[in-house]
Image (cartoon, rainbow, N blue to C red; front, side):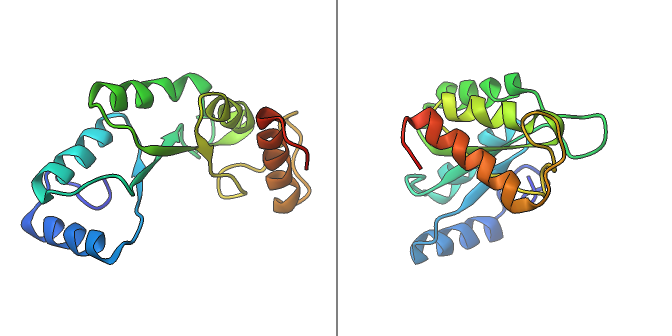
Length: 151
């Protein structure tokens, strides 16, 4: 969406992404809505790219006040990938007091997460984290717990 605001790959977009693919760079494709996955697929088709090294970051919610993320916002992204027959590595970022619930759902569904103060300052219990390290440590602990590993 940010790279192709007109929602159609231009010849310059195609050349750029082909060059990136040729370098072996793994791209983070940020998708703000499930429809953005269509744009990624359209680009791959137009540029004759394999998406095997690509991964998608699902943005669930928004960082503005009053728009905390909802864990139910993840399923539409996964449904769209399934509809398009795309099996890509994916992660979630979420915002506000519900970030931890969203990231927990992402782990439960087999995804990865992105966290930190750029997304939320809140701990899972709703308290404000003392610092970014405490916040990230809580999410890392949640990941280990869900995977059944110590750490």
